[in-house]
Image 1 (tube, one colour):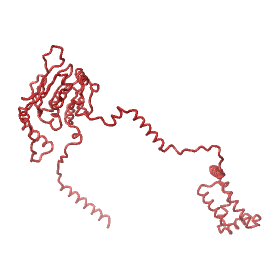
Image 2: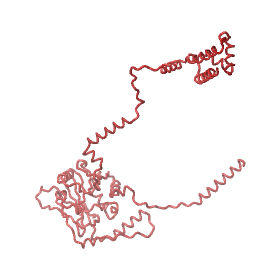
Image 3: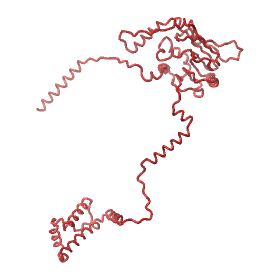
Image 4: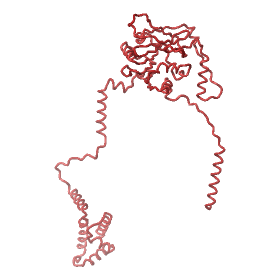
Length: 408
């Protein structure tokens, strides 16, 4: 097969490939894999993303926040207040609000007689079962038409909003604004406004805005010192599945717009084992760490082997011989190392041939070659001194001398 034919085949394959690619059609298919891991772990992830789009700094916390961890102009959204159980913690949190903080917290039906509620004189009461049946929502059916995930979410939200009785919608007007924001809280609890008939100066908070439906009061907003407190009966209106309904996102922005940093404490984790150990057993951890370090040092490979102390014992004769040989080899005194083998060959010839010493050098070499059956030139090279050898030459010469000695 010549070169031209190979090129023709390659060109034909490229042409067929280009033709096949030109006939392909691009088909887009949207695969809805459901919410990501960050959304599943954090029920208020969408709320944080929305506030970040408004230019705010958002941090999600699962550990209890204290007033010492908050800045004077921060916002704290409390969706779980079960860790604030004592009067002192609640008072410190309200003192932070007086310095300019913004507190939004859920006063739910499970938080009866909460310290924060007592300090703000806020109470809860409950409606009858008729209201519960009125606000009950029926889950919308899945749309039949093929929609993208975003369009499907919007379609479900519209269907859900249409099913809610308008009388159950809360309306909130902030700071004497004519615009009323609509929000929906499915709860049978209603908030009581605080008693404001006390003498001037006894109460340092002022009720500024109320969010209510025809049946219940769902949100109260107070001015407290230089800060603000907002009480809501259900903070899940800002959860991932509900923040897109009605004006829920706009309401959250209205309550936090004057602050640049927002902390969302969505729930409280029990401290991990490591945190408990650091808090209650630092000495035990230190001892355990030192024991681990000692074990590692005992078992680890050191920088070279340990050398046993020699003491006063004498060296063996073999050690002296090896040391002498290393010395002569280091200083290139190779003929001195080869001299014992050469003397052994000469002594063996003297024992076997009484007239060996009377022969000339050439006759001695010829006789050794004849007795050992080795070439005379090799015998002459082995017996004559050369002064210096490289390592391969030295090894070859040692083998040759040993062969001659053994052959005699």
